Image 1 (tube, rainbow, N blue to C red):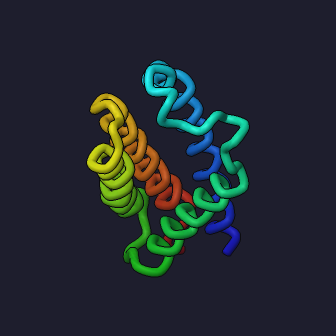
Image 2: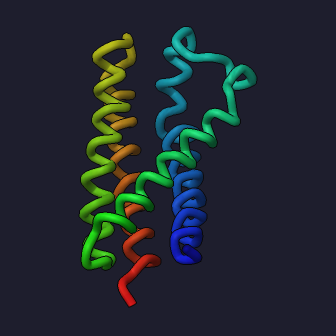
Amino acid sequence: MRRSLTAAVGILAAWMLLDLIAHRFFLAPVYEATASLWRPFDQMNVVLIYAVTIVLIGVVIGIYSLLVRPKSLGAGLVLGALLGLALGTASGFGTFVHMPIPLSLAWGWFIAGWLKGFVAGGIAGAVIVDS
């Protein structure tokens, strides 16, 4: 349990850093150019943002802990790459299908989602290992 909690905190910290870099630096110009699509920052539900993040972290940790054998960094990276591919595809191109977002934003969300999954799997694989 302690290793799972340590991995979860590590994933949360890594995701916060990745989100800062992706959204505040690389994707900020795209958000500014499409401002009519987004809620103003002060109207965003921060509690919901963190609730979704915690659920996603719980899913990564849960799948890795319960289903991956043997537990290793390599296994965590493979799991993370696959989960990141699913999350990135759904958030980036899934949104592109339904909303008039620029293709560059779909690609940005896809890459960011894949990276976040890969990093989460790597952290889980590095921290939660078979003893």
